[in-house]
Image (tube, rainbow, N blue to C red; front, top):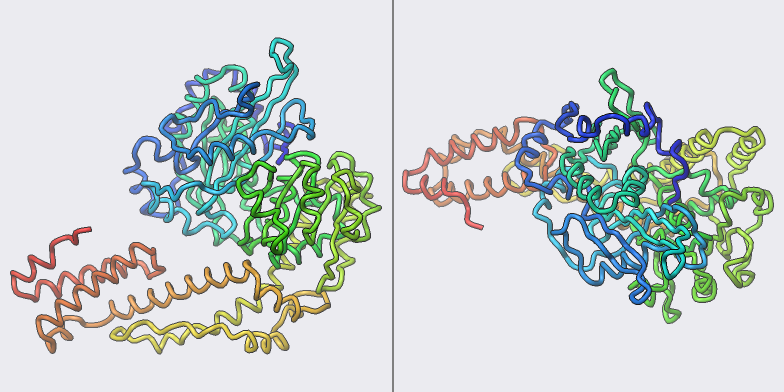
Amino acid sequence: MALQGPEEVGEQVEEPEDLDDQDASSISPAEEITLPPGTGGDEESQEAFLLPWDRFSSWLHCICVVGFDLELGQAVEVIYPHHSKLSEKEKTSICYLSFPDSNSGCLGDTQFCFRFRQGSNRKSSLGCFLENTDLDAPPCLKREQGHYYGYVYFRQVRDKSLKRGYFQKSLVLISKLPYVTFFHSLLKIMAPEYFEKQEPCLEAACNDIDRWPTPHPGRVLTLPIMGVVIKVRIPTSYDKPGTSQLVQSAQGDSLVSIILPTIHEVDLFRCFYPVFFHIQMLWELVLLGEALIVMAPSPAESSETVLALVSCVSPLRYCSDFRPYFTIHDSEFKEYTTRTQAPPSVILGVTNPFFAKTLQHWPHIIRIGDMKQAGEVAKQMKVKKLKNLKTLDSKPGVYTAYKPYLNKDEEIIKQLQKGVQQKRPSAAQNAILRRYFLELTQSFIIPLERYVASLMPLQKSISPWKSPPQLRPFVQPDFMKTLEKAGPQLTSRLKGDWIGLYRHFLKSPNFDGWFRSRKREMTQKLEALHLEALCEEDLQQRIQKHTEVEVVDLVLKLKDKLSQAEREQLPVRPGTLSKLRAHIEAVILALPEDLQGILHKPPTS
C-alpha cells in the first residue's frame, strides 16, 4: 500500500519537523501524556497487571530488518525485540515478501503490505486478554487467528560503494492487526530515522511502543513514538456503519503532531479508478468468494488494490484467504497455482510477469496499470476475454467470462465520472464510493439478518431449570420465500437476479463465516438470558426440597455457568454475575461444614 507524501498521513496539527527541535525526551514516554479514560471499567485494572513487552505484543509481534546479501540473497538481519520468536518458515516468507520483484523497478522509498500464514500454532500468554480487547472490534478489524500482516518500508537507492551498486533494505512491522493506514503512518516516522541512525533508534521505538495503552475499541489513544505523537481512535462494532468517528483536536493536544482520521481504510476510488466501470461486478465477485488475481506494476499498487477489494463488502467480513502481495517464493505457490483442481477462494496480488502465464486458467483477472497514469479510464468500459491476457503488459481492465447477477448501476458511474470532470477532491470521490458499497452490502445482508433473527427462540421458552433452547436451523427454501416481500428491493434501486445471487452466496465461505459468527452471538445471547433467569430464582427455597448430593450438583453446575460467562464474556445485564456469585455462596453456606470446605476450594487445572 503506497502512502505518498506526508500530507497523506493524516491531518497534521504541527509538522513533525518542528518537534525535532524540541527536547524529544520531554514528549517520548507515554506516561507523560495524559491518556483519556477507556470505555470499559475493567480495562484499566487488567492493564495494570501487564508484564514488560505485553503492551508491545498487543500491537506488534515483532519488527524485522530485511537486507540483501550478495551470497545469501534476502536475509533477516535483525529482529526486535530480541526475544521475539519466528520459525524458519516464517522468516523465509518475510524475506521474500519484504522486497519488490526485480521487474517492479522501485527506486527510492516504497510502502506496501503482505499477509502470510502463521508457521506454528504459537500461543500467546496474552491470549485471553487480547480476545477480550477484540470483543467490541468490528468484524473486519479483529485480530488474525492464523495469519500475520507484514507492513513494509522498502528503500532502494544508488550506492557506488556497494558491490551491487544499490542500497536495498526493508523495515517490516509484523502484526496480527489489520490497521494498515496506522502502521504505514508509523513506518513513515520510524523508517527514515532507522535508515539514518540504525539499530539504537529501533530499540528506542520498541520501548516507546511498550508504553502505549493497548488498542481497545472505542478508545481515543495518544501514542508517542520517536519524538512524534500520533492520535487515533480504534473503531468499535457499535459505531454506525459508514460514519467515521473523527478524532477531534483538543486543547491539550499541543504535543500531538499527527491526527489519523482512520486506522484501516484505503482510498477506494484511487484503487478502483483504473477499472471503475466494473466496480459492481467486482463487488459481486468478492461477495461470492470467487478466485481473483490482481496484476499490478508494483507491490504498493497490488497490495492497495487487494485491500480495497476485501473492504468493498464491509461491514461483512471477507472470510476467504487474501494475499495483498504474493510471489513465486511463497510457501502456498504450488497450492494456489496447480491446474489439477479449480482455483481456491482467494484474492492474490502479484507483480511478476511469470504469473500472467501461470495463472491464465484463473477465472477472474484484474489488470491494474500505473495508478499515476489515469488517462486510460475511459477505455475500460468492456470486460475483456481471458484469452486476450498474454502478458503482464496487457492493457488495464477486468478479464473474465463472469456474467453479473445484478443489472449495472449507471447512476454511480455517472456520479464518479462527473466528479472526475469537475476535479472533485479524491477524498470526496472515495466517500461516495465507500457509501455506495456500504449501502449495496447492507441491502444484501439485511434480509439475511432479518431471517436469522427469526430463528431465535422466544424468551418465554427459556426456563432456568432446563438447558437453554437451541436456535432453529437455517432452511434455505424458507429464507428464499422471505425475499418475495422483504428482499433487497425494499432498500436498493438495483434490479436483476437477486435470488440467483443469494443462492450462490449461500454456498460461499463468506456466508459460512458470517452465519457461524451470528450463530455464536445468538447462542451466547441465549446462554446470557438463561443465566439471568437463574439469578431471578429463589435458590434457597428450591434447595430445601433436594438432597445434599443434588445441592452439590447444583453448586457445581452454577460454578460452571459462572466460569463460562466470564470466559466467553456473555452479554449479561450489569450485576448478574455478582448476583450469581452471591447465590452460589448462600447455597454453599446452607450445606454441612465439610462440604463447604470442599466446595470453597478453587478448582485445580
